[in-house]
Length: 340
Ligand code: KG4
Ligand code: ZN
Image: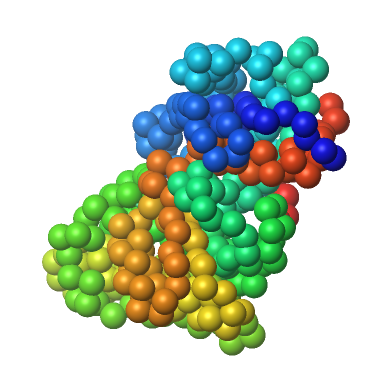
């Protein structure tokens, strides 16, 4: 499809989990506004995301968030060239709010509808931050639901070379945080506390998956932390939370760095990016910074606010889908287990 217009503006909507978000993105790379209404405080009361509460909050917030995104961009709805929306993967009830909203706007205005894969969005956050970045490159996507090592062949074209066999990296952070009494969401809390701890204090396992050297497994590590905590409690030994946090985090970082950079070299790339909530982890970013420099690999990472869930990343991914001619009908549905 040939696009004649010089500037393409996309209104993007994201509601796959516990963030109600809308953004206006120009030409896939320039963020004109990026509004995020987080429900974290609400879910903290329950120690994790409660799907029904998430859906209800999305319904309450979505119109306001979209209105604010347009206002902050100084844009009018009728000036948008497309409505991009996350349609999976995620919580079905949460996804449905964004999808229904996007369909309603598209139907009322005639603006084309473009469904976007949430993980494609996470990866595309890198295009916003690094205007010069173009595929192909290797990307590690580490979020609450996914740990994927992906070869980005072209815009929106992905080949998964490694994935987790059990827990996602973010899930491991959340579960360990809960076990040491830090509460939800675990990732940022462990990140902060680990700065005061000794990462070599406790030796936790670094799992290798025999059948695929690029796959991950974090459930053994999580169990090792739980066993360590139980052992201390039974022996009446004091637990140093900061040391546990730092040692656990080091084990996750070591595995993510080793598998990722091994893949970058083995598949013959010299560009590597990270994406997803865990990509905002300071120790992980630091380790990749150092190791990529040593190996002559160019390292790309979005700023922390673009790593966790947001709609700007959906606008970036949606732009490249739009250019390819992807248009969805009013039968677009939420797909909770959508594959990349
Ligand atoms: O990408 P994201 O916002 O949502 C999903 O698509 O899942 O990722 C959320 C996950 C949570 O598990 C959270 O604990 C983790 O990312 N996370 C972090 C950090 N910030 C968020 N993990 C480690 N260190 C952080 N600083
Ligand atoms: Zn996400």
